Image 1: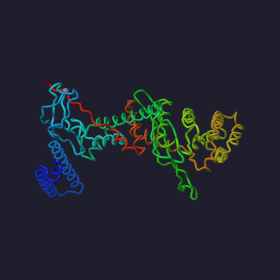
Image 2: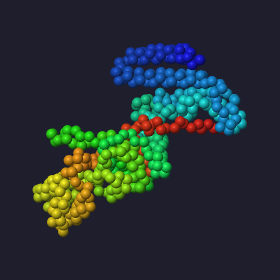
Image 3: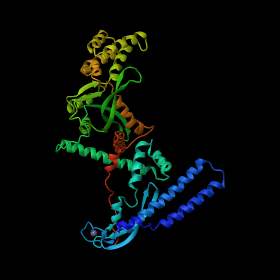
Image 4: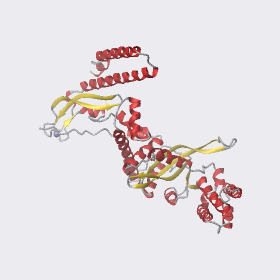
Length: 452
Ligand SMILES: [Zn+2]
């Protein structure tokens, strides 16, 4: 039976051929009816193709529905065999527009629960969207400027019209699933001690953390983002003859949560990336206390590095306070201190600052900062070892994952919505889209009880 189904012409073949003929004839008549541009013909052809594709998909699904064997329905959840059989139409919106699948429908004589085994086999839910459309909606919902823009883009790309809330639902549902998955990983690692499977054994693994504020209905909340990456050197585009260290294979993890929970989440991601077998672990960040506390707790053997930009910022602040902003003296003094800092001579920088200690608060701030972090500022040593000294990777991550999508003008998010959309974006920007999509469970059956 299976062997012949594939070779026999499908029952809707004649109808498809007739439709193709009619579509082609109508398209040619329309195109020659008046002067048309290629853009117009292109759009018209696209719409015609979409119509044919829709008919083809519906036809194939009808063949599948026909092929369901009468005895294939499993017993009802209540244990009673299902007997009554008839066909019922179910609508599903696909990448080729809405189609109706008239499939075998069973009902349980005992509890009157309805059953449509084909729905499970095809992995769709009546009245819902196909897995393909759902994926595209989530992708557009996470990457377009807004859910409205996502639905506009979808219509442009596929000619399928859906309301923006469908893009929101697809994106948030996926995001909640990813959050649950991440949470389960944490619970497994901290409870029974089931560690995430490491995908690599990198010689060096770098970690960065930062916070970025998101406007939610509950006020401005800090989204904590972590990045995990390896490094490689390449010729510097700005300094010919020099090499520069750059980040590669960057993955992200983040949430609006407390530092402790975030630390566990980041550790799991680091474990997945091979932190337990890495020969060298490096943490690069700005001076925020929670970051260094987490680094000490979760990555105790790591080399800690204060981001060069943040460190040099304090030199400039002090220089402006001592000699006046923009003055040649301020510039000269700052450049000397930066050269010392670059050479790893933090004690010399500290001595120069102490000389002006009474002058301004900015000098005192710089003194505190350099005193506190001097063991994280051995820049000459880091450069000699080929370590990155900038936290640009995490700052760019904050912009890519949060600012670009969640901080559009006037946006105020529900806290749950912001967390879910951000979760989708972390997986997407980590190159894990296919993994994220594969996590989706088969749709649940939600048939209503039929009246007795
Ligand atoms: Zn039943």
